[in-house]
Image 1 (cartoon, helix red, strand yellow):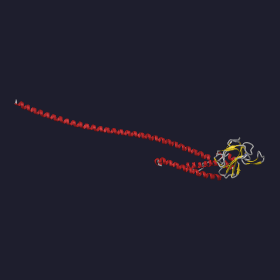
Image 2 (cartoon, helix red, strand yellow; image 1 turned 180 degrees about the vertical axis):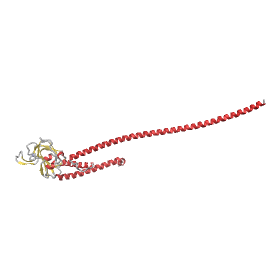
Image 3 (spheres, rainbow, N blue to C red; image 1 turned 90 degrees about the horizontal axis):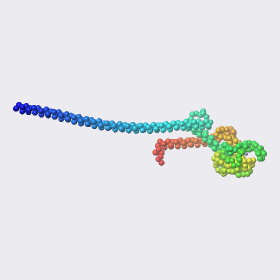
Image 4 (cartoon, rainbow, N blue to C red; image 1 turned 90 degrees about the vertical axis):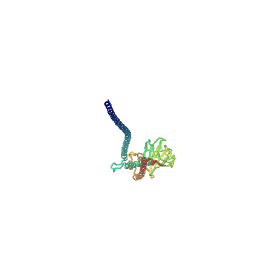
Length: 327
Ligand SMILES: [Zn+2]
């Protein structure tokens, strides 16, 4: 029995020792599991944070890509607008070149001239066309009564009323009473003569450069003495006043007090610009052209300078709008 109790106590001690070992093992495993879990949780959290950050970066990059895409679209649109504008400017430059070519050929400017810049070509063409325009403004040209036919020329003839052989110092245009008469060039009205004798109702126009023109046998005046008129202005109406066989306009042109044949002046226009220089030798045309040329050249240069100054001001205003807008 004693053996059994001793044996039982030994068994129990062995059992307790085994149980203690098992428990220690369990706690150790539990501790390890807890450590592993903590580590895993931390790792998952780290991964989560990293994923969030990556997501934000992707989002930022996507936004940046969108912005760049929009900016690229704007740049492309701007580039297209600039290209269109450049295309239009090139076309208008080509047109301008063509117009200068046309002007040069109309003005008879030689192709043998040394090469010039567009500005020089424009200036030369402008001076030449301005000289012509000025001459046509200042010196009588064209018919004073546009639709009336020429019925009597300039020179010696037998007068239809006096039957005497006498110089006819002008041209006669057959026109019914009341046909409008227009100034053939700029002028100042020198004389308004009302008369029933000789030339009848007569106007005398004083033009520039020594030219004078007269209008006789008129019915009515539309101007007063001392008045300035432009080419093409209505100065009065035809009639049958004075020594006249029927309604007509007697038209004279004088240069420095001497009557000239008005025919070359009546026929004178832009298409036959040079012909008058040969047909009318009583005028020193070369000298006159020189004077008008200098006058016009100065105006063209002034206009060109003004244009350049305006162009520069506009460019400055464009490049620095705030400064330009400051009063
Ligand atoms: Zn006459």
